[in-house]
Image (tube, rainbow over all chains, first blue to last red; front, side, top):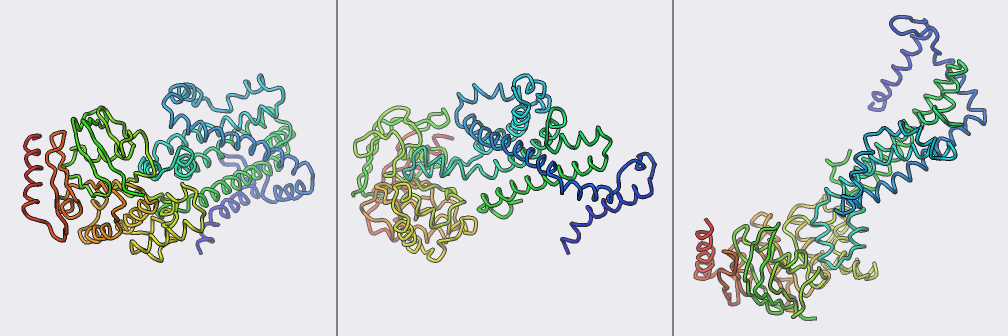
Length: 254
Length: 243
């Protein structure tokens, strides 16, 4: 029953899309040139039989995973460092605070200048997008950790390693996964934009390329593919997060 | 292994940059139960955390078996008033924590943890997570965890303070049952009766130092009204001074 309810809004959108394009509605918005669900489905079916589609898919996935994993590792480590050490915080936070408001996509010219290959530049943009939400949420999670957990482990004889691996790491996971979810979202935004600007291959590049050759069903196939990829990767992060934080009280789980 | 003794000489302690205790002299004998009483803000928790090695000494000497206390140690386990269980560990894994820290093999430490859980009346709840326990049950688990590592001294910071009266009495009885003379206990409380029921001696803190030190003879099945009056007088005198 609930599943039916949840399927309602996507199905309604699909139906509306069909009606608007089937009748070439022109009222405020123009649907006379807009491809209908049937055209898009046919194009999707055609692309699924080509190697290029999978090549683009793999290229985008490799880029996002590389950038995201780098951001998760570095964001987690640096977020922990600036939260635990006042000196590291004094040293690094001013730079982070200055760099953070710059949208990662605005770094495209810099990436083109700095990196010999556009591939590295695109991964850099993806990394920069995901890094800050992950770093900031890690920092907050470390600072919000109840001190009594660490005190307890220390007075039971635990040393620094035990505190880091047995208290800090499990304790910050709920907060860190919030940052990972946000990071994955903005990473996709910036990856697709970067691919559209300077990519060779990749779902974003293909979508823009379809537009430039007036292949509108191809554009929509690209957009739907991007949506599905984003949905699947965010879902994977969410699933991992739930597994890692099963111990949370019911009211703290989302 | 015998209990740890503490030597406190002309000790000054500060909390959050504010001095709370000055010129404190007090010896805690190996294997004794010392209750530390005092109103809130008198520095009793600060003293306990310093004995645990969590807070630095401002001035004077704080020794365990004659050695200066510089950091935390498995010999001096602290039991907290608040819930200090690690919420992602099962009750058994929480109790086994001090044993895991000293790298005891898993099967052995799980067996010992299960024993301790049975001793505090929680047999059968080994696999529960802390979130599925009541406040009183969590404190029982914490008591078991504190004792499971066989520390030479157990430092208790109002461990039953947040519990209802009945659970509190059960926990007090439990503590006297599981306590053995090879462990020194320093027990902080603001409850005068609890101090007189549990402590071999009651140190009353107030006015930035030791207001009174009361010996309580055994057996301690009920509270001696004369001693209660004496402790209350020491507490009262200091309350008047500070207000």
